[in-house]
Amino acid sequence: MQAGTSDPQLAQTELITAIDDLNTLSGTTDSANLGGLTLIPGVYIVPGISNLTGTLTLDREGNANSSWVLLVSSTLITSPNSVINVIDTGSGAGVYWDVRSSATIGTDSTFLGNIVSLTRITMDTGVTDNCHRA
Image 1: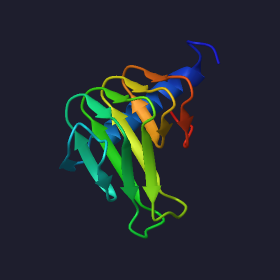
Image 2: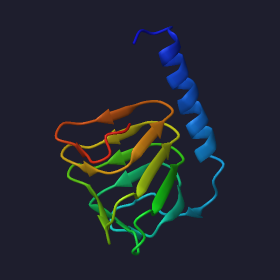
Image 3: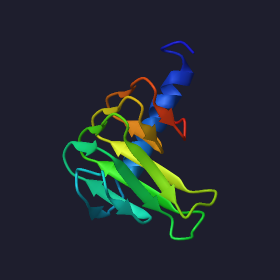
């Protein structure tokens, strides 16, 4: 695709619509440090700059169609070797990261989820992205 054609313009419009839709959700305010937490399906407001050090566990609680929405009010950073782990697995779950600034997925991290970001998304070397949508 070439800049200025309808395809990039459509993609930009769809991105803005997705961000606007995600920002209409309300949820539980949680810690900016996501490492070591276990989250059940739901919407989470992550204040400030979010840092994932270690493992974030997402527990489906037996629901194969669970979803998590993480509304990151600033920047998302994962430290090297951080992991997002889903337990009580099944097919069809969804993880969505709405990042109001930029996202940096650290070296050798194992990431899960669909990222939308207002600024930029950086994937360092050795990142495993199990959704492949950023």
